[in-house]
Figure (cartoon, helix red, strand yellow):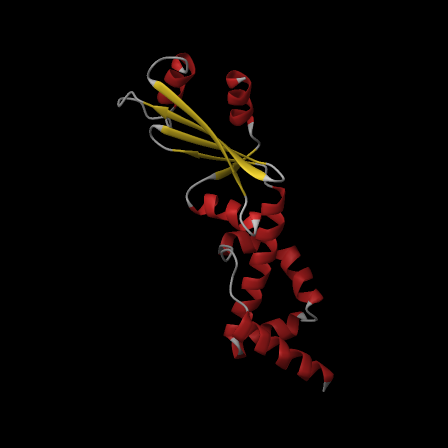
Length: 175
């Protein structure tokens, strides 16, 4: 009876109060994190047999468990992210995500023949980063109510998680 009540209240909570904070992991990501997902289900007191039953008899509940797991994974990843890069044809947005704020180094290439996403374009940039064809901007911004959500918004806009080598290189140049 206690297990039934636990599941009943969990289902109510999931169905009425839980919305995804981030984004569901892809099938490939879930497969890669299979051992972690098994541990997650175990912490929810869901056995392998119960999981099979959930997937067939209550697929919406199974989907919600995947959503909760996805948010937990994203939360863990985002809490560790320190650098992001968003590089387009003629712009580089390099972010250093500190404890209290997001710092931005922005680069704009004024040469219309250059595409920073290519080796040729990036090599041109490395040779000409001090020329009049390159503009720089620095800025910083305090986080909103949830810094991980702010980080995730940058990722949704195309930023990639990096080790920050490019940001650090620019930071030294601009000192």
